Length: 160
Length: 211
Image 1: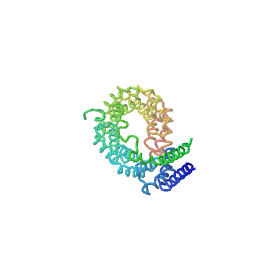
Image 2: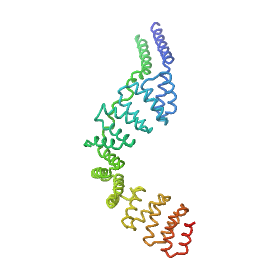
Image 3: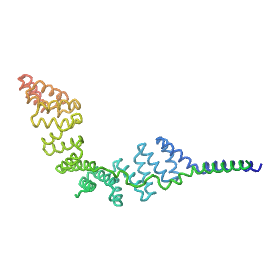
Image 4: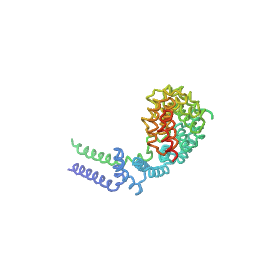
């Protein structure tokens, strides 16, 4: 009888804990819902959930990234850039985030913004050909051909 | 056997904890965001691709000789890159190296030529007075872009030089249908009518240009 009471109390405890979790951690549950939607490509439905979460102060890096991604996927590049800028501020030194932000600037046509990021990344990692190529392309888009040519020659290991 | 309920209780407890732990995963993943935050992705950019882009940028910058040199290096490595060959031909044409441009274009499978390249080839043959080769290319181009009156005018002129007056006049009429107020085209049309000995019509057309 004692054992049975113990089992029942444990089950009740587990259920109560779960219920309390669901009540106290609603944001995480919402996050999970939106994350699941985004994984299935339902960015339009995921976006307002991420947006609400961030507005409520739920600003984990993953939330900011997925918010930016959801804006990007739904065609709002300006809002995507804003989200990635917040993410970059929250992730100092994360070159991957910086690259994504620069890519968004490029897509929006702000090649100067993108070039500034590529310059900074190259200063840290001068041998990175991928970043060097992106910088050369951004400079080309800006009409700064001579600088772009120097970058391309450097990528090819040639002297200017 | 007596321990079974205790085991069940322990299992329930572990299950409940695991259930909760499932929700905790995002906390654990919070710090990264990407599986690999390194910017080294795409490091494996082939040289030929960078050289191709360099050749293009050199041409944008008006450094045509250097651009041609890069295109030649690229095509030495990747001779089947028809698009690069076409681009080089265009740069050569801008450099007034028509024969070399034509040579570059002739090495390409005609099915791979875009409309602009077909027109370029037609113009190059026309410049070299190879009218029999230029005419079908102009026609091919004009099938794709019937509204290009400047190209049609070049074909009309060329046909008239070849004394193919009826064909030339037909092209002129198409141009004038699109551009009825173009005095210069109408005068050229009148000239071809005269060469075709259709003096009455030529006079009428010339008169229209004087109103």
